[in-house]
Image 1 (tube, rainbow, N blue to C red):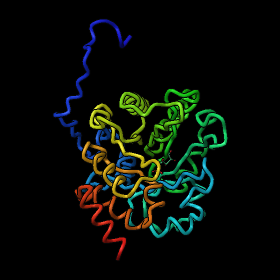
Image 2 (image 1 turned 120 degrees about the horizontal axis):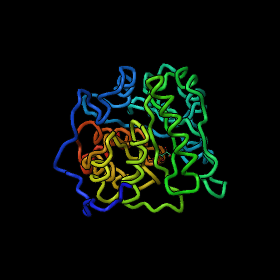
Image 3 (image 1 turned 45 degrees about the vertical axis):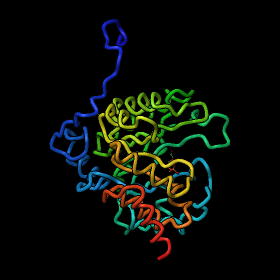
Image 4 (image 1 turned 45 degrees about the horizontal axis):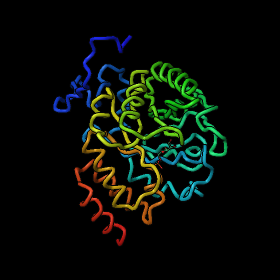
Length: 293
Ligand code: R5P
């Protein structure tokens, strides 16, 4: 057993030691095939190594979320500002022009809706790899529920998606969902992110937390953060800045962009942090200026 006697008691994440560079800019993915690397290079900007993903996949469990009542009006004006469009195949096919030129991360699971008593129960793979390839997606997002009743089913789905993704060179973005009963502690995110990476996910999406640099250090592949519930713009930019400073390779943000008073300016401000080294104060000043432009 991994916990047998003789283990060191204290954990050491060696925060002062950089991860190995193995011939590819994205951490831990240097040994993947050409097609996988090509897709990763569309998701992450090879120059900054980072990614701004716009998440608008909320409707598949929440219905018409505030700000996304009309996908066709909400998303196209923001497309030019981001690296990746993250949504369901239904949303993307119906509301995003195929000429957009942006990388697509398809939400590829079905999950229980917010009306169901336990959202972790009743999940599975919601599309075939044929359709992923037909849509020319650069990644698929798989929701998981570590520590909840739906854990086993969601991990089975993740493993099968990784097998299919490896077969065709499509990276899997493993998402650590946090249901009502799951504590958002550093220990939780350390466990959940590592678990998904070891099961083969190429990218992990999780939430920002205390000691986030440890979560990043212990995860062998790139981490991007989810935005979570709407915050005042200054606070959301501070969260993005701290995450990038602590080693996150991107931000997969939804409500803090499309529910902003000025979604396009917010998108641009987050991009300044993700790609151009702005700090949170500089990005907020940019947001205020861009909002009044
Ligand atoms: C995650 O499972 C959701 O479907 C969203 O993709 C994710 O939460 C990001 O959106 P937000 O920034 O609004 O939390």
